Amino acid sequence: MKESLSALQQFISDFNLRQSNGVIAFRAALHFDNGQQHTDDSEVHIITSDNIGAVYFLSLDGKNLPDMFSVTEHPFTYVAGECLKIESPVYTVTVSPTEKIPAQ
Image (cartoon, rainbow, N blue to C red; front, side, top):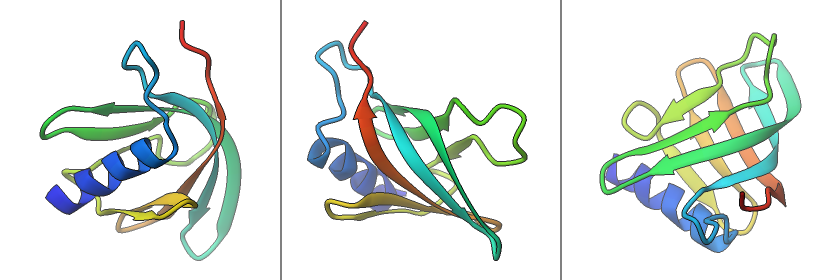
């Protein structure tokens, strides 16, 4: 879990995703691979604290795809300057930021 949280924090830092109000929200290209590949675009929110890290995909309505991953349940790795990679028993998901969402 510690390596996954560290990878998530490095991803947030390198892409400068944390807004001045502390919110981490952005648009990203998502690539799901479970033997069949599916690419989508979604708003992404990330919640972090000392021992918590969760990534939420908010724009996948009606699609049969997972919309939340946690560092306590899934291994996260960071490919420097490219993407966050999340692995689950069913999917490998890559998250590549495309646009920051303005602070509210």
